[in-house]
Length: 170
Image 1 (cartoon, one colour):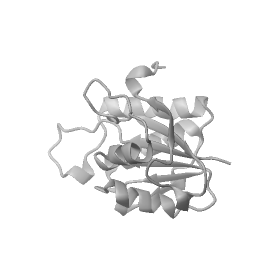
Image 2 (cartoon, rainbow, N blue to C red):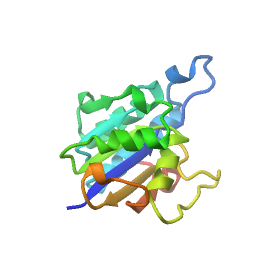
Image 3 (tube, rainbow, N blue to C red):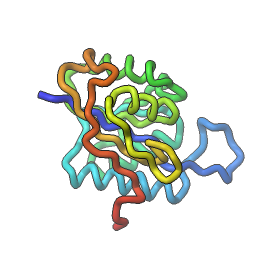
Image 4 (tube, rainbow, N blue to C red):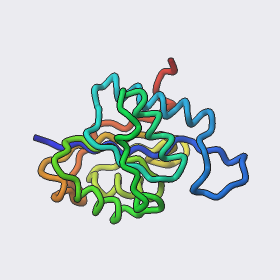
């Protein structure tokens, strides 16, 4: 049975407030986008078996809004400090430690998340208008065969890449 990986970049953060990077909250637009992505996941019946998130405020808030749309308790989120500022290799090593879960949602940051997406998928990824694969609140849905420990470069297939700009607002 194939495994699924959902890579979600945190939603748009608020730069208008003077604070350190880790503590930056979501902007109103970011809160709306996280809700849209969560609703899309619910509509597609893509409820994750595990949710891993960076503990940075903007990433955790994104994960919480997604969980709310999916009807999942916020306590299900595994906040892992190693995700904050992680590179693709660190994220891949973290995913290889997963166990029996069939579908995992990883909420994190660029450039690590985008680099991981490019590393795992052998085909080119369409870029957003801003030239990024994963702009804020973008979600990549990947599938791969084998166990988590076998996840490797070029081993996954991109099923879909969702950006909030492409979703209807409710």
